[in-house]
Image (tube, rainbow, N blue to C red; front, side):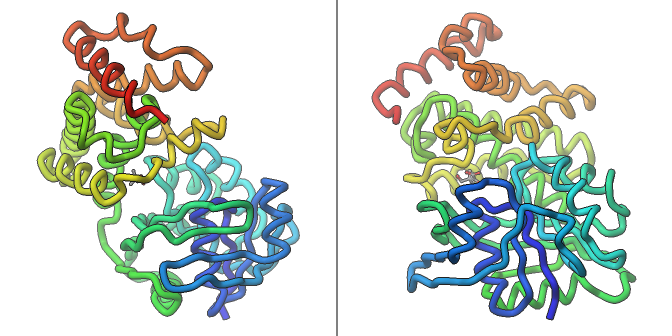
Length: 332
Ligand code: KPL
């Protein structure tokens, strides 16, 4: 049996650990005391068809883990540096670290501590939310992609992909996961900071004219930055995907909004911040992502984002004032 360590004990970590534990030796690694205590008593998985109780091994001590062939990284992007240090302590020399996280740069951060050949870029559109400590709801089925690397022996990625499939996930090996990561990044850039800023569910992007325009522009800028870097993301498709996801998750609170509501850090740097930075390096203007970045980081530092609208470029001020107006009726 494969020895798998799921790094991260949030919703996505719980979802993957619950499914994988039927066919592998799974250990969950994390540092959130209440969640660790709840998971030690058992993990509850709620799907549309059934509610399952699963026993998983849980630890907060990376040095206690021996013989891990796969580290499945599902921490938030701002925790990746710490995760990389921990994985370095326990991963087998022939093992792999698979990242299915949001945002850019997670694979590079893992590769800065591990052998880069051990790092596998992945992406997933599975949806999960925590209903309470130790209780995860499988909110929506999605696709999972793993980077296919030719000539790797033994083919641990292929074996892990098979295990994921047997555990109920839709998995494809792809030679170009980076493009898939960028396409998802464009969707996250459109939905997450805006919903977190105004405090609204994802469907607000479809009902508010100003939010719709801002979201489309954020997705389009991300696509233009991708293209400038030789990655095949069409601005039209990026906008369409963002709107499709907003529709299919209309009543959901985005992960970034949940982070704000729970006073946790957000993934703004690995999503919007990365687009702004790479845009500036590639000579692609990203004014809407920059505005979202500035306003949300101001809000995260405890400020009132509405007071910052006057500092935006002239053409964006009206749009964000309207956003503020339209958000008043919908705010959570
Ligand atoms: O992935 C998401 C998130 O909340 O992080 C989306 C797709 C935006 C759904 O809410």
